[in-house]
Length: 209
Image 1 (tube, helix red, strand yellow):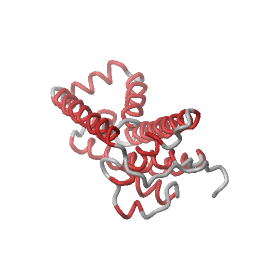
Image 2 (tube, rainbow, N blue to C red):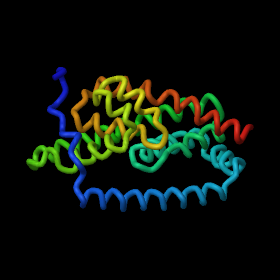
Image 3 (cartoon, rainbow, N blue to C red):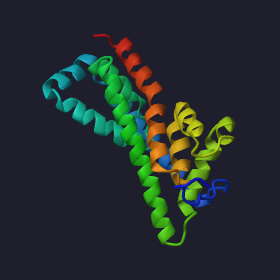
């Protein structure tokens, strides 16, 4: 086992019935919240968003980046925020803001899983919900990703490019398996680059200055 990697949890086990019910309920809440946010966003045009940015000046990015990071660390899709960055801040400023937001979100999620696993270890239930959640993510991931070693650079970088779930497919199992911080940080820095380049460009194209 490589130096610095903790004993991995069992990622092949099936999630319990209670966990699946909680996950289903969580997904329903996420979908409802997403629909509500989209409906609210549709009430604002680019001019409205630009007016808010001009009003708050440099505080606007200071609000956008933390919000993006917190959303990215949850099952809620943060793509809408990145596209909005392109429309409001323009290219290439939106690229930098989106990269920072996604990178911080990855760190938050990775840290959260590691903390949860540490607490489970202390309580004598090392595999419990952390291992089940990691197993669930691996089961939902494409077959080609499941064939890669969890925590390898290929797993962390290529898996992140999967739309609508790539971050969770890679971050949760890697954190549960005890992947070292250093490897996770440099792989994540690379993995978020394609999305940070593409999605802001879509927003800038859809709502040009």
